[in-house]
Length: 250
View 1 (tube, rainbow, N blue to C red):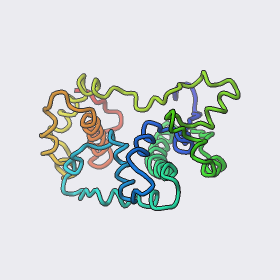
View 2 (view 1 turned 30 degrees about the vertical axis):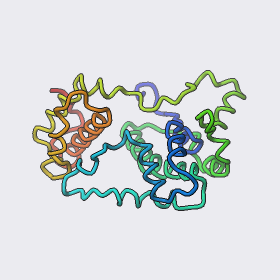
View 3 (view 1 turned 120 degrees about the horizontal axis):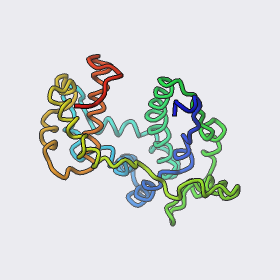
View 4 (view 1 turned 45 degrees about the vertical axis):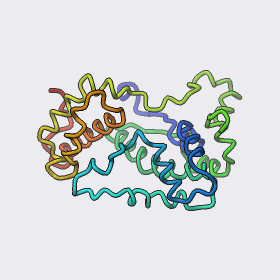
């Protein structure tokens, strides 16, 4: 993209403000009810993000991390301990978690590195305020499990609906193929003498338990690839034994 332009228009905020994560809403609403307490809703919310963690998540980390699920739950309490509807509470968690404290800081660093100006027409104070005033049924339709209703209506009004996919694509990279083709080999190369293991950030016993398994579940594949990315980041910015121009090749 940098070879074509220094300006990038993105749809940041569309999913968080106008209900684009439809593959999670239905599950959350079906596994909670109006009488669910705060902790039950937080756990249900995290269970709708199962691709982001593994069943034995607490065993992934070394002693330096002091990983504790209760500390994770505390982060989400303000978003679920209020009088808003259950779906609005999910929107609050998505906006304050995924967007503000995850994706936006990452994107800003990427844009800064490549000297790209990122313009986000949807994510501004006016639309943020407007989205908070919209009732849930103008964002999400439970019966059809479709979201961003008001944005879809605008596309129809201006004959633009054919320009977008009718179904959210989500995470489209086939990580199983990536892992089997060369991801696992690269992982094994870097974790022969892992700095994360040496500094007790990642638990080597957890790696040994799963790394040799055939037909590894996609959640574990994604976790291994995430840990590999963390290892590279650690060597680039903490131990400084790698440089940014180095290629991940054996």
